[in-house]
Amino acid sequence: MNFFRVLINPEQEETGHPDRKLVGSAANLLQVGEFQLLQLAYHAWFGKDLPPELVSPLFTTYMIRCQVPPWARHYARSVLEQHRRGQININNPTYHRYDNAYIRESPAGLIRFLLVATLVALVMLASILATSTVKKEVTSTLPPYFEQKELRSNLSD
Image (cartoon, rainbow, N blue to C red; front, side):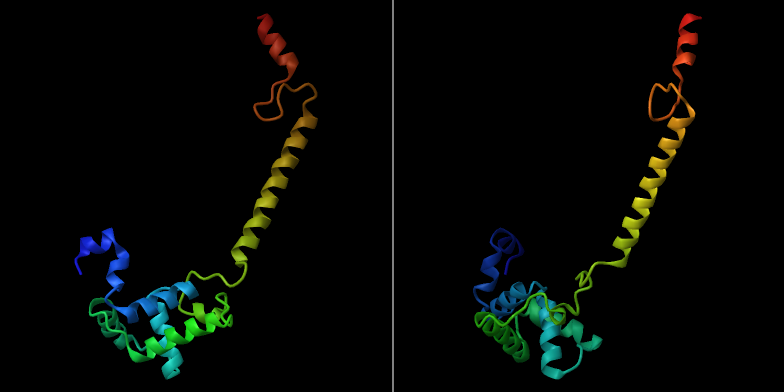
């Protein structure tokens, strides 16, 4: 397939390859990449993760030669059938086991950030309140703190 033709009309790439369209549909349904779906299919079929030495040959076979392994085709059909019956939960962590960016729960960093932000805000408020009590007739709440009597003496000079 011509690279520029695919850029103009991406759907045209899969018209001659119904098995790739099947895998793409299942991957889109689970909200994972096509290669991640192949990894899930391999794990479901063989009961173990895809060995690193098979990653490159599988990628070449699938992406370049447009050949879908039978176990991947079977897994894709199974996913689509389960979806048709309403039995798929796309938020199930087992579908996202190879997805590093998948967030399963609120990250600990978010809680730490909120605590630090709250602490900084409280320190700022306390410093503003403390400085406003020291100067009696201030012209502004934020620095620089000038008293009105200082401004009047400068104006009269």
